[in-house]
Image (cartoon, rainbow, N blue to C red):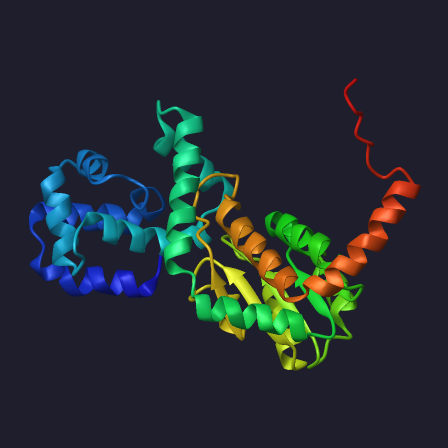
Length: 289
């Protein structure tokens, strides 16, 4: 668990009541589960009242239990193994309707992303992409669909778009070895953070490229290596990572870049439409009689 939070518990430990010490002990030993419990469930688990849990959060300097819970979740997400994710997900879901829970959770991530995403950093990212001689898009494992989706649409604008989804470091470096200061790199990484992506981004930064990172926190390993950081919430604790909010930010990037390059895009699409028609790429619309 994050050393700062552990230090906070240790510093305040002397002033804890008997019930609060039980809460602190449980959090220390079972942080992967505690971080995703409601105040009521945490209290029931350790044998104290919900109000005791709330007072515990306030005693640590938080304005209530939700803010303490959020802090714990952000600190532990990248530490959870796949097995731990399944265990926590099972505890959280319980008897809830899974469809409603997932959709509501995703809607909340979209709302929080819209509120926190820096419009200044977003514009810097668009400027860097438009100005770049080449664009490398890097995402491995569960983040690879984000890289592929962004690359698919940016290739309508330019032939100089390289999608890097290699899972191994050696294969990744073979694909980015030519990166230089004329280029922009867009990298994706969410808990559990990919070591391969961080290494690749570090190399690109050392080569002088402008590196744009799309991740969930400015404290993430990826963010530390980037020139521009775009934040999107992705904190569903399960075997499946929620990519709804990151994908929405990707959509916004595509729209913003194509707006800046609308003239070139129109010419390219016009040529493509002729090719698609000549080679029957798409089903032709059947007119109703």
